[in-house]
Amino acid sequence: MNRRLGRLAFVVLTAAGAAAAQAAPPVHALPPEPAFMQKPPVPGPFKPYRRPVSQTDQLPNGLKIVVAVDHRFPLVSVRMAFRAGDSRLTPAQAGLADAEADLLTEGTPTRTALQIAEAQDAMGGGISAGVDPDFLTISASALADRVNALFELLSDVVLHPSFPANEVALEKANMLQGLRANRASAGFLASVQFNKLLFGRNPYAITAPTAASIAAITRAKLVQFHQDYFLPNNQAEIVVTGDISAARAHNLAQQYFGDWKLGEPAPPPAPPVQEPPTRRIYLISRPGSAHSTILLGNLGLTRDAPGYFSFRVANEVLGGSFNSRLTSVVRERMGYAYDIGSQNVPYRELGAWIVSTQVRTAVTAPALAAILAQLDTIRATPVTPQELVQAKNYLTGNYILSLETQADVADWFLTTGIYGLSPAWMTDYVPNIQAVTAGQALDAARDVIHPRHLIVVVVGDVQQIEAGLAKLAPGTMLTIYNDRGDVIGSYPPEGPAKGHGGVIH
Image (cartoon, rainbow, N blue to C red; front, side):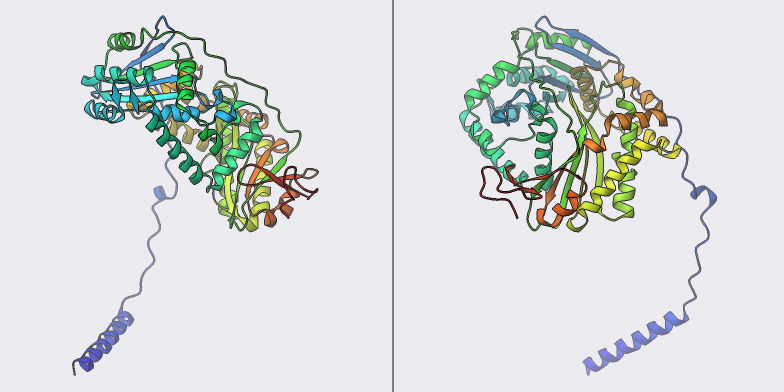
C-alpha cells in the first residue's frame, strides 16, 4: 500500500511539475549591456618605479655591501651571492654546486642540522640557498630585533659548513631520486638536450646532473668547492633590506664577514658558442607517447644588451603571455596546444631565447610549421599599435608587481649588482619599456630570432613524427636520441648508429 501511494505521489508531482513548466512565463532576453561595458577601460599612465635609497660599500676583502632601509615592517631580509653556479663545473661535476647549496644548513662545527633549524625558528625567519648557472645565492630573513642572531647564523653556515657524512649520503640519495622523477618529464628531457646542443662546450650547456656525476660527489669535493669559490672577492655581494640602519648593517657585515680571507677564484671558462649553419631538428624517442614536447630557439640576450628592452616587447607580442600571437594562433585558432610560450633567459655572459609547447602526436609537424610561420611574421612587419600598447603595459605591470615585498626588493637589488647592471636599471625599467617603438621591436626581433638557424628538440613517438618533421628541415638529417642522451639513430636512416647495434627503425 505504501509503495503504491509513493508511486502515485511521484506521478502526481511529476505531472504537477510539467504543468507548472508549461504555465511558466517565457524567459525574456537580457537587456543590452551598457555602453561602458562594451569597451574595456583605458589604463592610466604608469608611474616609474622609484628605487629605494641605498648605500653601497665594500669591505677590504672585496665583499660588496648594499643596504636599502625600509622601516615599514619589523623585518630584515638578506641576500648573498657568489660566482659559484653550475657554469663553474665540468659535466662530470654536474650537481656539485646544488649539493653545496643544499648542505650549507645541514651542519657546522658548532651546530647540527636540527640546531640550525631551531635557530632559524627562534629568529622568526630562515636561511636557504639555491643555484643557477651563474651564482650560488643564500636568502635569509629575520625579525628586526633578531638581526644579530641572523648575521651570526648566516656567517656560520656560509663560512663554516661541515658537510656531515650522513647528510652528504642523504643528499645524494635525494638527488638521485629527483633525477629519476625528472627523467619522467618530457620537458626535462627536452631542456637538457636543448642546452647541450645550443651551448656546445660552453659550461652553460650543463642543465642537470647525471647518475654518474651524483655518485662522484664526495665530502672532500664539497669542501674543495667551498674553498675555491666561497671567497669574498669572487663577485661576492651581500644585500640587506628592511628595518635596519645602514650603519648597523655595515657594522654587522664587518663584524661577521670582515675577517674572511681573500682568495684567487678562477675565471669561469667561456668557450665561444657557434650558431648552427642551418635549422636542425633533434628527436628524443618516447615510443607510444600521446604528445610531443617541442623546444626550439637560439642564443638570446643578456640584461645589459643594447636591444634588451626592445626585444622584451617583441617577445611579449610573440609568446610572452596568454595574450600573445603564439597562443592566439597555435592554441586558440588551430587547437594544437594547451599551452605555448616564448621567453628570453638572460645569463651573466650569454642568453637563450626559447619557444616551448606540448602538442598531440598527430599534429607535431603542423604545429611546428605554425610556430615557424609566426617567427617569420614577427620579423617581417612591425607589431600593431594595439599589440604594442598591450605588451608594454603587461610588462610594466608585471615588473611593478615583482617589487611588492621587502624580499622582492632585495632580490632585484642583488640581481642588478651581480649581473653588472647600472644602479638606475631598476628605476629606468618602466621608462625603457614604455619608450619602445614598433620599429625598435621589429629590429630587435630580426636581431635575435633566427628561424633559419634554430635548434629544435622534439620529445615524442619518433616513428609517428619523424617523416613530417623532416620536411621542416630540408637538406639535413634528424638525429635521434634515447632518454639518456645517447644517439640511437637518424632519419632518414643511414645505417647503424655509432656504438649501437642499429637504428631505431
